[in-house]
Length: 270
Ligand SMILES: [Zn+2]
Image (tube, rainbow, N blue to C red):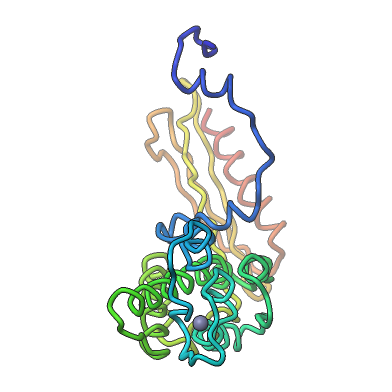
C-alpha cells in the first residue's frame, strides 16, 4: 500500500482498495466549478414522492404549479425541474433563441441535450454547461419558497435570478468581452465568431562565451521591402545594428538579405 517513494499515505491505501469505475460523463457535467451549488443535489433532492416512500404524509399538490384539486400532481424530480408549469416556462424562455429541444424530456435527457449542444464559441460553450444547473437551482429555490414560506416565486423573478447569476459568472470569465446583461445580448454573443488568441512566451538566450548572436528580420509592404538586424555579444549588449531599404522584392528575398548582411558584417569583423 506504499507509494512510489515507499511512503504510506491514506491516498495510497484508498487507491489500493477502491474499485475504479469508468468515468460517467453525466456525473462529470453535473459538477461544474463555476456553479458550486445544487449540481448533484438536483437529481437527488427530497421531492415529495421520495418522502412518501418513508410513509410520511405529504402535500398531494406540487409546489411549483398553480394546481387545483382536479389536476394535482405529486411532486417528483422530473415534474419539478422539467415538466411542471413553472419549469416549462423557464426552459421555454432560455432554450428558445438557442434552438435546443426541451419538450417532454426528463431531467437527465434535458441536461444531456444542453451539454451536447454544438457551441460556436467559448461563451456558448460555458453557457450550455452551466445555465441548466443555474436554472435547476432557481427552480429548487422557488419550490422551497412555496413549500416552507408559502411564497410563490413569479416567472419574472426566477428568470431575473437566473440571469443575474449567469451574468456574474460570464463577467468574471469574459469581463472584457462586454457580453451584456439581458438574454437577447447573451444569445447574440453565443453566435459571435470569437477570435481565440494564444499567447506564447519567447525568450532571448545569450550566446556562448567568445561568440555573438545575430537576429535579423524583414518587412514587406505592397511589394516594397526592407530589412534590419542586431548583433549582440555574450553579455547581451548590442554591438551592431542595421536597417536597410531594399526596394521592390519579396518577403523571402528580404529575409535572406537581412541575414546575409548580418553574417557578412560578422565575418568582416572577426
Ligand atoms: Zn408543479
